[in-house]
Image (cartoon, rainbow, N blue to C red; front, top):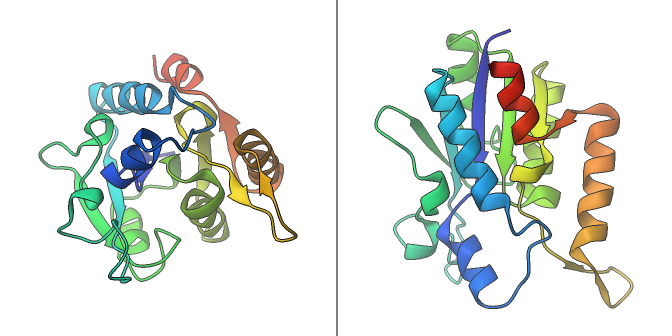
Length: 184
């Protein structure tokens, strides 16, 4: 199988949320992301970055605004593809599928933000399109969210349910360390 790393929405707006007090479920995710990318680059595995460009004028995730810039742990290097999306899935409205097929990539390591939203949409779409998906659970950002019936669902519960659903049928759950061992 030919593999690529797909980095979803690791943008400064996420770091701004954390700095403002919104605790992520996995505070080490940024360090794990940096390790994942360093390992991929060292082994010549292509890295593709997909950034969110929200059309809402009030959103910090708009191309050209500081919140849309990549986080330091996931900054693209020369030669890496950067795509911009306007929807949740990295496949919706982008050339991602065409690019992957052109390059013969049939397995994706998907990491980034937010696990229950854009990562989930991307993983499910990738699976539906026939890609094998590896999901390093320690390189995913996740947050709490409002419950439909009131109150909030804590970040750990959101992440647990999200990963349980994705691992049941759409992806193989792994860690950055396990991926590094397999690549060695």
